[in-house]
Every structure is written in C-alpha cells, then in structure tokens.
Image 1 (cartoon, rainbow, N blue to C red):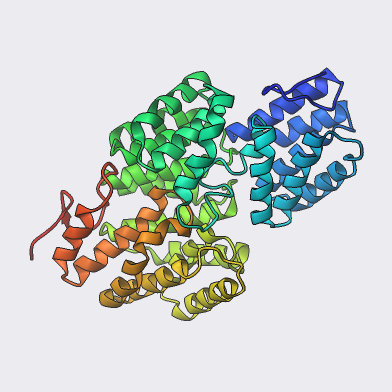
Image 2 (spheres, rainbow, N blue to C red):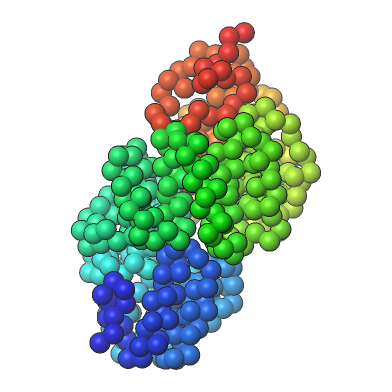
Length: 438
C-alpha cells in the first residue's frame, strides 16, 4: 500500500498520484505556491483519489478561489463511499471548515489526531496562531495551542514542519530557549519553509533581536516566490523591524512593494491587517499621517470585508475606520460585532468593541476615554486574534494615550510590567523605553 510522507496509507495505487499528492501537501505546509497544480497532477493520474481532491479544495480556499474549493469538496465527498475511516474523517473536517463551522471542525480535529496524530494536513488547521485555536477568541488560547501540540511532539520527533509550529507556539508563551532549537532545526532541514521563516521572525521579535531579524529577512526573502501566501506578511515583519530601527522609508518601500501592493496574493485579511497596523504604528512613533493611504485601505476593506465575523480582520477594519475619523462607520461596525456576540456567534465577546471604541477616542485626542476603554481589555487582548507581535499595537496605543494625557506614572507602570524580550515599542515620547519627563 502506498503511503504519504508521514507513513499514513493512501487510497491510491498509482505511484505518480501519490508523489504529486505528497508534493502538494508539502507545498501547503511550507506555504509555497503550486499546491493546486500538484493536486491536479495527482487527480489526472488517479481521478478517484479523494484526498487529492480535498487537498485541491484547501489550496483553492487559501487562494480565494471559493468556486473551485466547493467543486473539489463536492467531488471528494462523492468518493467517500467505502473509504477508510481516516479518509472519511479527514474529508469531513474540511467540510466543516469550509462551511464555517469552526467549533465543530476544531472538535473533529482533536478527535482525529488522537487516532491519526501524523495527519499533518489536518493538524495544520489548528497548529498555528492563525488556525482554529489561535483564532478561537477564547481566553488562554496561546497556552491552549501549546497544550494541544505538546502531546503530539513524540509522534513527529524532529520533523521540520511540526517543529516550526511547535517552536513558534512555545515562543508566543515566552519559552524562547525551548523554541529556538526547534525553529532553527526546521530551517536547517528545509530552508525554503516559509512558516519556519515566519516562526524565526517572531522569535527575533520576542527576544528583542531586531537586527538579527532584519538580517535574516533580507537574506531569506529572495528565496521566496512572490506568489507565496506569506510573502506580504513576512515583508510586514521586516517592515516592522525597520520601523523599530527608525527606518520608516525602508518600511514604507516594503508597504508599497509587498504587503499593501496591488498584486498582494496572500489572504485578504493579511493585506488589511498588516497595512493598517503598520500605518497606525508609524503614527504612534511620531511620523505624519498619509490620508491617501488610509483612504485606499478603507475602500479595500469595504469591498473585501463588508461585514464582521473574523476577529483579526475585524479589529483592523475598526482601526482603519478610527484612523479615517469615520466614527459613524466604526460604530456601525462595532454594533454589528456586538449583535454577533449577543447571538453567541462571536467568541471574543466585548473585547474588540471596547478596544475599537478606544481607538476612535484616541484618534479624536480624547486620551482619557481611550484609556478607560482599552485599559480594562488589556488582560484579554489575546482574544482579539493574532500573534503577540500583532496585538502589541493595543499596548502601544494605550502607552501613547497615557503620554498624551500626561499620565507618565501609568506609562512607566505599563512598561515595567510589559513582558521581557520584545523590542521597545516605537512610541513618540519615549526615551530608551522610559517616558520623557515634562
């Protein structure tokens, strides 16, 4: 019986189909373009190979081709009669995911990996900060991700894909010494692994190794195809390092050429979140606003994300509305989130509405109101979705609000209890991480 790279049996008896399928899965796991074409080759070699059809459905979803996703899913579901228990469970998980049943999909994943722990493509749906645990909106989700991956580690050993994900999860909860060797081994085994590169940039951020992060990204990014799903986001990481180093011009070149470019090929929410957060952070650092850039982002948000429902995107849409001074649009957006929360369909609850209104108050210069809205939410900020590097924007905004309100003692207290390691937040009014005295 033919098996995949992780030793799991496959339903196909055609070696060419198996080889193309394994290639497609690896391209998905490394976040490189070309997965759909690889699955097409697998299907051409064996049209009845159900997992190749579901692999193509996942590749289509990630590139935003929802029609192709639905067609491939339907084909895969039509091939499940007589399929193995593993294949049936694997396909059903993707059915739940594609239909927006995130809670049910995560429960199915937990059950699936208890029996088939080395089904990496299924595991990948929940193994990172952008997955079903990371975006759950629940308190403690960072630790939950580590707790989810830890018992699976013996099944993977030093596998390059697993170690990159487990290493980043460890880094996000501050276990940097445990994270580093895993991430570095992953990169040493497969240098062209965009997720491992992503994990390393986060490690550099969390340990305050700004210059190492810049050097690594400048060396690694030329290896990566512009069509890769993380191309824009990895350039955002480099842009963030440049901003921290005081190199706004370099950051804005990356903004224009990569993470807010017209040919951005990553997820819609990545372009919006990376671009809006970079502009907001640059203004917190004291650089002037560019209204034209914000206006373009607002147009993009209105076209691509007409209603809330995905937390990471939602609070960045609110950020763009706040920056544009459109309080009516922001309030309408926030009220729509609150309606979802009342209906039990928004797990992060009141966190994003409160912080969003805080952003608007900050934009109006009402620093006291911004503090009153953001400060109580700070302990729950992980529920907003995204990595610690992304959610640090909330802390930076609160810090700048303290300074704007002349509440220097509270700014000092916030800095004193900030987690150790990350580079000092680039906020105007700080001198080497300490608020300047008036």
